[in-house]
Length: 380
Image 1 (cartoon, rainbow, N blue to C red):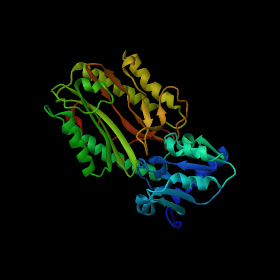
Image 2: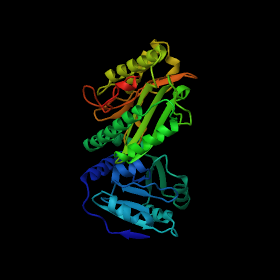
Image 3: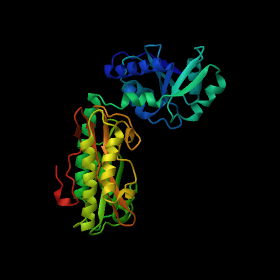
Image 4: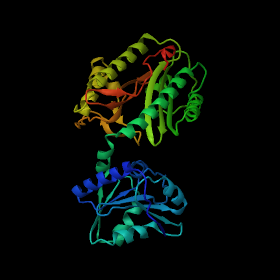
């Protein structure tokens, strides 16, 4: 095990976030928060890595000024260079060492220690300490962490705007590339490459769903050939500097039928009614109900088979969830999707998805593309 000197310098942004979680830890009587997920690691330190089988964790203590970042030795250099905390202790371990021993040494220094962990933590990092130490108790802290992340600060909002700017261009290129005879997979591969070429860091998904496949909301692209008259749903996600954009448009290859137009207009009205509901201190479920009741009143309620939206930020899906039953109040700076849909099994589906930032009196829409079934209507 190697312990490197603490780094001085770095961003006050991350220090402020650590201070905020420490205040919450004090309120909840949590001694140490063990951050293990990539999104939360990035949020509190500016550093992220996929840990796979090796432990990577950021330990935030409520009683000490420093935080400790524990990484495998192969990540030591990246961690040292990318962690943006002003003051942190970097601890690395070799493949012949057991990182549980490092945790045991830290936790055993206290008479009683209440450790906050994320629900996604691997059990192999929790159980050994329970059997070795009698002074340790665990608590889930996902709610605390999300309570900080749910409202985006100005820096996050700017990154999300840039992610959406890239995604608008990608989605436009995807729509303009639809033609009779191209397969869903081929279009998907082109979309991914184009997104990376114009600035996306990652393309977590590029769903191309045509014909009856468009009635399956999470259908992966297939070898199906797009035909004249097909409904085509394009649901594209891009990642930029750790933050996501998630946009969807539905078009027709050729001229839409009267039924396709009718369903599209119902979904469009549902989305607009939901958007009109958005402002600070409105319940999240009221936004969902505005869309849902529009679709239900049109006779297609049973074909709207998911919530109206989800938060977006360091994760593609995160709080707030725009669904019936969520009575939480919207706050300025929250960012989420509005994406009602109607899915007719064996026929076609329609979904329209925007990303919005809540303001005191309404919202800012990060989706800049038109909403039409006609490919020729699309431009930026």
